[in-house]
Length: 96
Image 1 (tube, one colour):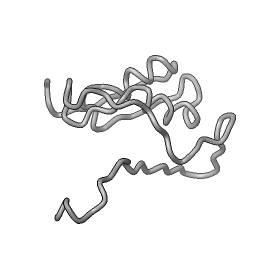
Image 2 (cartoon, one colour):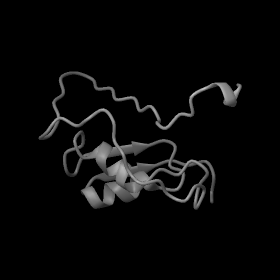
Image 3 (spheres, one colour):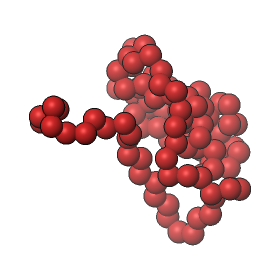
Image 4 (cartoon, one colour):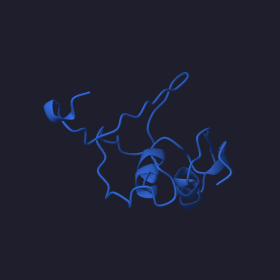
């Protein structure tokens, strides 16, 4: 695309789906979450901030529930799960 003629994206889209009835734990979260950027590509080219993962997981995952991360990358979701007392399964095809 022509990057000189388009807005520069400052966000990423996240899908949230449930099966059956669902309600948030505590306060309803906002649809836009702002966290400081991390050094791009420090461990993985698409590495996400742990703080972002914590803010996404906390309102939807009760303590001791399970989180499956089929695209583990640098493991930011796993680190967030450890701090939130969530069980974690990470899958990654790249051994690094």
